[in-house]
Amino acid sequence: MDKIKELLKIVPHLPGSYQMKNDKGVVIYVGKAKDLNKRLHSYFNGRVTGKTKIMVSEIDTFEYIVTNSEVEAFLTEINLIKHYDPKYNILLRDDKTYPYIEYINKPFPKLKVSRYLNVKKSDKKYLFGPYPNAYAARRIVKLLNRLYPFKKCEGMPNKVCLYYHIGECLGYCQKNIDQNKLNIMETEVLSFLKGNTDVIINKIKEKINIASDNLNFELAKELKEELEYIDVIKEKQLIVLNDYVNRDVIGIYYSNNQVAINILFIRNGKLLESHNKIIDIISNLDDDLTSYLAYFYKNHEVPKEILLHKTFEGLDAISDMYNVNFIIPEKGKKKELVNLASNNAKEYFDREIKLIDNKNRRTIDVNNELGKLLNIPNLSRIELFDNAHLFGTFTVSGMVVFINGEPCKNAYRKYKSTEDINDDYHVMKEVIYRRYYHALVDQENLTDLILVDGGLTQINATKDVLASLNLSDKIKLCGLKKDKHHKTSALIDGDTLEEIPIEKNSDLFNFLTFMQDEVHRFTITYHRQIRSKGFISSFLDDIEGIGEKRKKDLLRKFGSMQKLKGANLEEIKEVLPENIATILYDKLNEKKKEK
Image (cartoon, rainbow, N blue to C red; front, side, top):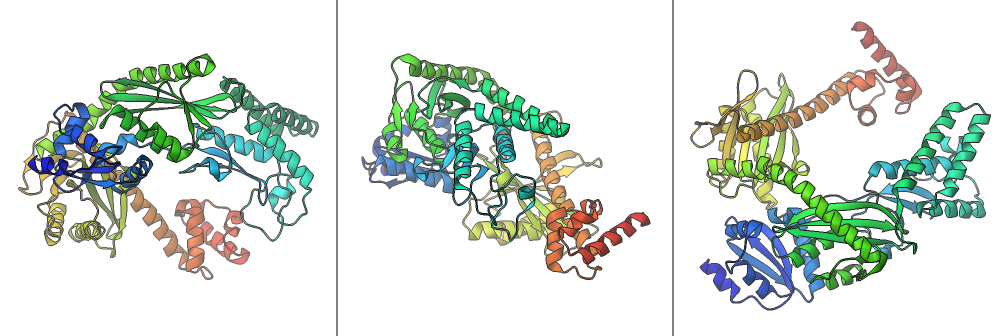
């Protein structure tokens, strides 16, 4: 604490971003401030509570970057959080981006579903949404592509494709297109995407009548279902304002150092959907709320205006960053919308907080229990390893990662052994060395705990590698032992090799079992993929005319031996020349007869 007091004396009264570090030098929180001195002093004045108090107890030191403005402080904070992925910033980040329907008019008209990580008004894109229901966005695009002859293929083919022959493309690659026809098509589609459903409804009815007259009752039925779907969309999209302005309405509800946020998406005067989030307050309400909004609008379309119930410190900086107007309505329909969003925020908070508390008991609390049991203060990251092979062939390993008790699937890793051997010791040595050698070279934050799925062989292999990399005193190692029924039976301490008793019906035992099942599932799934591709490759080796490139093409299309066996000749011809496809097809049929 004396070190921190000395550092606080020299912090300037300037805007910037600060980074809190634990005793391992790992960044655990990144924040921003208009006045660094005031903000950093506020953490160490003894008045902090809740998650802030827990976070402060882990701080060993801090660093800061001075910026020229509050906007620069926001941008620095965003970049540093992306770089360090600090454990106490996780809930401040938005966890998904919503899809939009994008209309492209140059060089040829095209519709697609897009997810943009950074949507700005200056991009001048024809974007419609957001659609929290991705299925709805895809279905609308599919319907419009069916009703209108947009360009559907990629690139510029040498001849017109199937879409042209069935009337769903104008043949942009080969034909001269009437610009007037394109203008009419564009006007109708944009009108529909802005909320005028009549033009599409009439077009569907017209196509239903044509299909019925031609006795194509299956097509007529499909179009009737699409017509009913349009009616459902129409009912859901409540008209709330008649000025057709794109705006978001933000409501919040604050309680017990947590804030619930509800964002209503209003597009062309219609209420489309809403977004909900609960975040823990680590810095203060204004800072954490504006940080969340900065992240949210980095990943989503920025509307013309945003309605709020009150202003917050930092909103001016967000307004400058994204060129958006924040409005605090005092009466009228806009005020009613803000009240609606705030009521939704409260209802969401009341509904979710019990679920969140239950989830914390299942994840954070049990994770902390494991940390205490193994004497790992502030246990955050756990990495688990498992191996799989088939009689020494197709040898693979898998690594799964849990952070604060929850699986972090984007951190999972697959490893293909450099040599196929039936030797768990050397396979485990190889994968552990590859994982942590690269972690050291790339200066990644190391894990707090390694769990290996197996007995003493895997533990000893891992210990040998950690010792060779000088990591034995930096990473705790344990093994998950299984019984004769392949069920989790015990936790083995990697240092003493003693079994650590855990009650079989406890939350901690269930947590360890879940982690062991997850790494096993992940590794076995990868093993099956590799094995299936290996069987295809070995089978294809005996067929003349199929080299490495054609092997890869077949693997890309079919993926497994089972799917290749089930393919018909026409499907195989899509990948291979007709004569070679016929040879392969005959060979596959021979193999079926043998069985």
